[in-house]
Image (cartoon, rainbow, N blue to C red; front, side, top):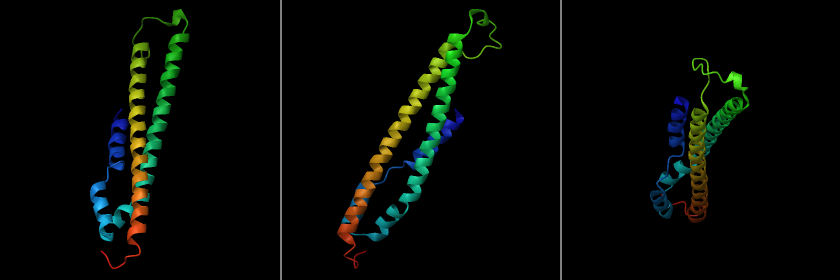
Length: 142
């Protein structure tokens, strides 16, 4: 759980929003000093985002598998093995169901982050194309 919180904080920083209105204004004025650093940092930022998304997805998948295996063990356990000794018993079916719901919430949050990241990347790419078309022939502006 602690790892998930740490990863959520890192992922939030990676998917950090761009001030698109300010970037649009700088592109319209062909302000290379403001525009180029945004585009130059993009590859590094995208690489970090993909790594964070992959790590979170791998962790969710591993936890889902472990939870499913534990639930299957509870369902398939012989009645004699279902002794009321709680000191050695694993999590209950209710606890495992709650864990599954938490994993579903994490998956939805990750899917939302990836969706926003895809939209952000598309916007940056389109703005880069527009900047090149509009400003690269006009070298004297800065």
